[in-house]
Length: 190
Image (cartoon, rainbow, N blue to C red; front, side, top):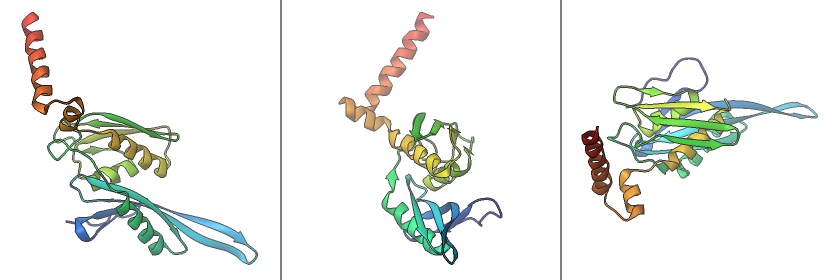
């Protein structure tokens, strides 16, 4: 089910992992340390891993070689996976807001057929998560690390109607029943 990697641009690398995990390389950064003999180069990689069924994680890795940095980032991403409740297996249940440092993210649920309307690093998160319809906007920063951390902060706030009902000590049907009843009463008053 792996797609062909995109040509050019930053990142865009996608691989199938064991356990039906897909990893996406978001960015690679080359850093230099100046020493007596010249410069020593190292690489920092940012990877998003998901099963496209509601679980996603991210990780950063640093090493002297690119493949080693990617491997370390992928291992960290697998350890930090979270489960996100999805509506009909294609979008989120409600709109959320997340922030990390200067990064602020608005994530909105969307109708069927909308697609993933999100930029760069956020798109990698939603594709790995398995969300098909979402609208997301990044405010405040273009730093991929902060954008991903802000996106995860927003996704961790997402909850399903079943979770909300259990926190209130009710059943999910009771929550929706009251809303529909209020709408019919409001329509009758107009």
